[in-house]
Image (cartoon, rainbow, N blue to C red):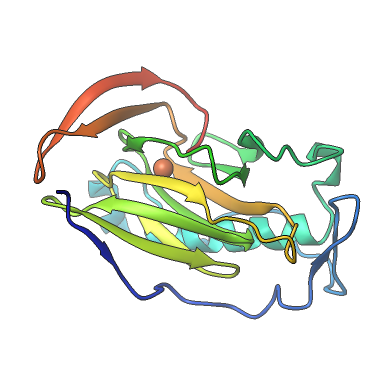
Length: 212
Ligand SMILES: [Fe+2]
């Protein structure tokens, strides 16, 4: 049987979203002041040019953090649905240029992504509300972790994972949302399935700019 190893929650937690709430119409409310539009930090070093992007994981984490703050501040309300689909995943692009794109994703418990990589892009995410479960391929087994509101994670090249929302309890009906950044912008993904207890088999590669 596949070795699925639970781990303690990881990543850093920030406090800027603790004062945010999601109102009955699904919009965010927050007393936080407006922030500047999404832009990567300046001064990336030349060493990053050995990767497919000059941006580093820390840059992408900053982008998803800022994207989450902008959603909370209401800057992207015009992109949000009237109601959150309780069955299917949903996503919208918050920002895109030649170097990176930033997405907001709504997750549901019954729609896992399948095991996939992000082809030639590195990525990151910030959980905006709710909790995610990620199953990551370690090279010999699947390892799971939960990512809660405020948690962040980054995905280097070759990262293979499956992601879904944790079950939403009646006491917490808010959508499970996360902001993702990819650099270079996402263009393809390969999908995998377990081939025995300790190996993966790639099943297909798709050209896509839709985030997972
Ligand atoms: Fe992914």
